[in-house]
Image 1 (cartoon, rainbow, N blue to C red):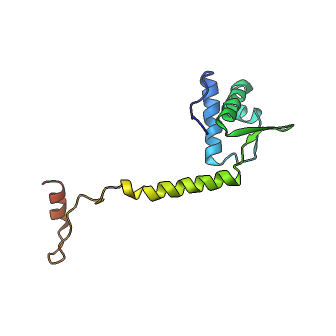
Image 2: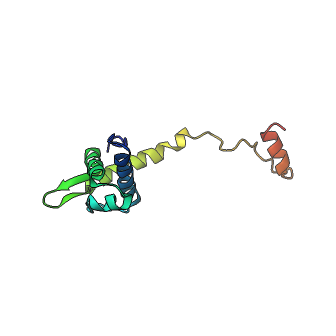
Image 3: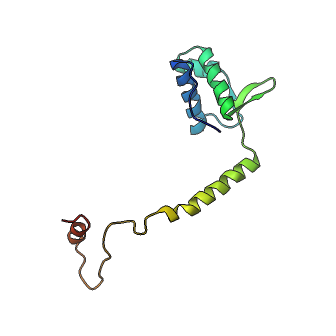
Length: 128
């Protein structure tokens, strides 16, 4: 996948691109599902030409493939691509705590020997 920039063929093309992209992201269109120009055009109340351009842009983005004698369909990820995504997620999740601040709250540590007063802690944290 590359840039999420919609095609520049006018308002209808942008709407068609955004609608089909949203359906793919939301799982309304599953991998392997055929993309017919008539269905999004009818839903959006536009002609098939902007939908055709949106499908071309989605092909360029790598989200849609052309299947011989069937037309356009939502691209399926290969096993290697899925594994690569999980590896990237593991790397990102592992590095996320390193970027976090050392203390998540601006509150001072609580002294266990003194009674806890939330108003005092709040006042100290906010210099009141």
